[in-house]
Amino acid sequence: MQKTFLKINLIAFAIISISNLANAQEYSTSAGIRFGGFNSGITVKHFITDQDAVEGILGIGSGSFVVTGFYQRHADAFEIDGLKWFYGLGAHVGGVSQNANTNGGLMLGADAILGLEWIIPELPISLTADLHPRLELLNGSLLGIEPALSIRYTF
Image 1 (cartoon, rainbow, N blue to C red):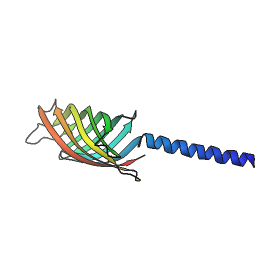
Image 2 (spheres, one colour; image 1 turned 180 degrees about the vertical axis):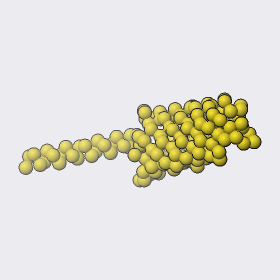
Image 3 (cartoon, rainbow, N blue to C red; image 1 turned 60 degrees about the vertical axis):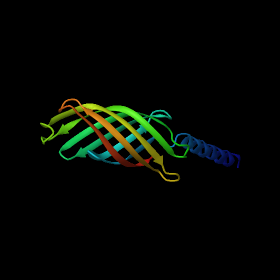
Image 4 (cartoon, rainbow, N blue to C red; image 1 turned 90 degrees about the vertical axis):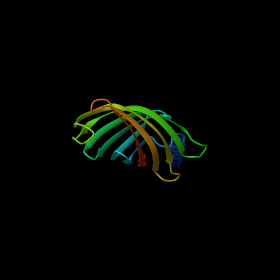
């Protein structure tokens, strides 16, 4: 009887501890789909601290393929539960086919990001809207700003 009572208490303690940890940091990793102005594809974000995350984007566009990585900082936005704003810096590498704007070939450049993320209460889903300025360094000097929307499953 005492062993059963002890096991129930240990299980309850573990569940309470895990739920408190989950509330302290709303999620640790998310994966989903990004719909962008230049490229759309797969996005994965992982928090390395409560405020800092790394994000990888695998994007495919009209005649292009690009992998982008970011280091991001997050903070609460507008005192709304579950809404966070974020900003970050990163880089991209990829390839583009020849068209009116480029000669085709390798792409390499510097990136920034600024956006809002809403973690939907009671659901393992986050929605993101962001602006993604990027500077192409190899394939013709090009500065562009890509708006995007993402939906991710959080875990």
